[in-house]
Image (cartoon, rainbow, N blue to C red; front, side, top):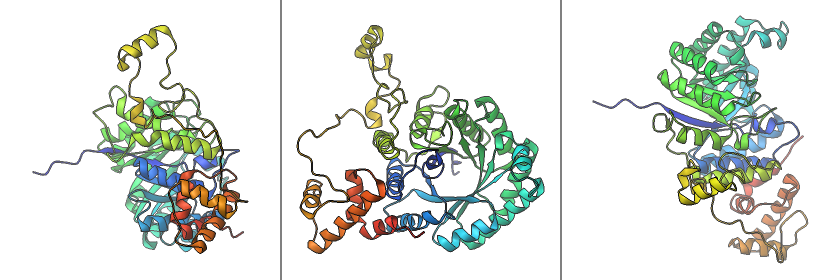
Length: 415
């Protein structure tokens, strides 16, 4: 007799969609592409890579979908976010015809239906419009569809069930329960998600915010509820917890919670593809790209995450790690010293010449077939520096040299 598959917790990272909506900050399209590459290395199931209906995203989205077809972004899935309207669905497939994974979003709470839609839509219109959008997306070629209930945590539970059942019957693969304002507690979200999952019979995606400081706890409690109800769970994360207002669930903190928290460790199964030893690398890159320092007390990757000064703590940690460290820093890819160049530095940027440029790439052990290829990559590196307005990282330089045609698309803007 075949053993029944155990339900799992998968991670869908939304740094490139919700993270970049953080007020006052942004990512260049090259930086968003690098985030997708690093998320794939971490083993994240899916990246919400952007907005298919937004004009300035089009070249970046198509370029990343091409990277996926080439195998450079695999096995991670690339998914677009759009409103649950037929118009958005049709625009999405006209501008990004190769996209296969979508999340369609619409508000479900009384607060938003009354005070956001202002009479344009009522509760029945919300369900009807969502059904039409899901069916249209499926007909146009969507392979997976998540339906987002925005402000689910403040929605009437009986209406939320009716909405989710309608999505299921229309062809949705999962329901995204959005705690849009960080309103839930770990206790309320557990009860509500379990009730929803048991009655609808679909996997549940948890999208939580940190307005009350409970985002990781709520995300994990919601995932626990879905699995206890017999469904897979998908937690939305962002790298370093970036996101609107107080942020979203931090990728590394969520992984650590599932792996090490009492009552979760060994009982609730995290997607086996997750590689925690890539955590340090992606956290540092996100900090650099966003221009936002990692808080010293950030779980796992903060400067003080493994620092001990108190006599009692230092003595205990030196005697045995587990006295004061719940997990090992090596597990997160930490431990090697960061090398800081203090002598001569030749960098590549928007005003680089060919000799300095060649010196930079020689240090990366990248050789060019001829002068023409070198000149082409140099020109792209100049554009990349204009594009990011930051010195390029070694991985960014490698990416440009390896995928010059895709880099060209990413840097191209057509207002």
